[in-house]
Amino acid sequence: GGYDVITTAELTEVVKAGEEVLIIDTMPYEASYKKTHIPHAKQFLFPIPDMTEWDTKETDGKSQEDYLKLLGPDKGKKIIVYCGFVKCTRSHNGAVWAKKLGYTNVYRYPGGIYAWKGVDNEVAAVK
Image (cartoon, rainbow, N blue to C red; front, side, top):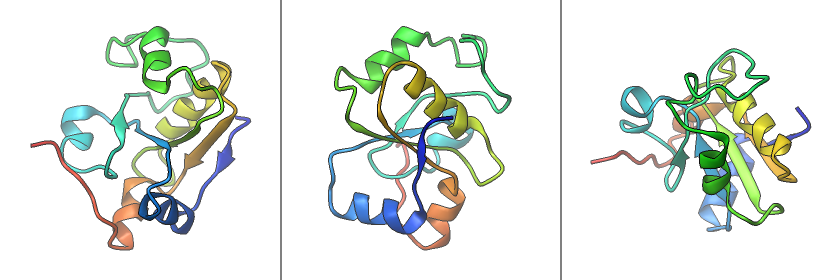
């Protein structure tokens, strides 16, 4: 996908250090993000199958422009995209699309929320 991969230990350090980074949770809002997500992560749904062309039916009605707005104007900012667990490919789609849209410092966190919680890292929820 042209992106880099970040480990649980590396992501933990990024979060603990308060590094300026955009973390994107690609899981469904109601079923997942609302209940538990990495602190300060923003939600943007992506599908599990490879999304080779933008399909608003697969992104909860959101457009490419909506994703660009979330990603912001700085094409060099550090962006970390995650989903549920290692076999979940939503994060792959989110990272690939960030790269397609011209962002250069994109990481996929393949362990997802499952690995994040697995080492007792703090989680957030929508109240």
